[in-house]
Image 1 (tube, rainbow, N blue to C red):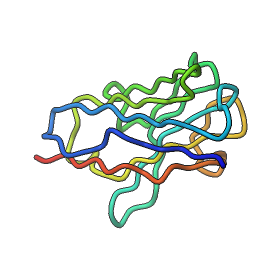
Image 2 (cartoon, helix red, strand yellow):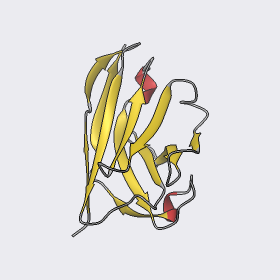
Image 3 (cartoon, helix red, strand yellow):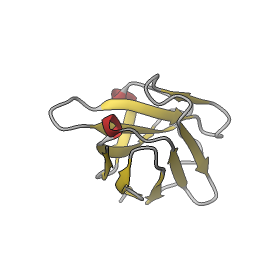
Length: 124
């Protein structure tokens, strides 16, 4: 059974940092793109960041560019999201996702597997 398990969320003050992790089990995703999405209360799920199969290509939403960094460790079957200079508007449930393809994707429909999410709350 394929599982994606996020961790690292929590409560942080504005300007602080958090590092999210997403550990995959049940199959290897070393040949697959991985992504992070988030959903705030009352809003639709939105793209945050994505990385291709090798980790060599990344893409970000404009709202997080320059503050967030996505990376992956294929040996550990894990993807990370380093979040710096956090703002209250970053408050959301953050979801990890794995695609069937190898490239990077911003559309949620390109992702086949999803984690349960981890809450990130940024206080002002």
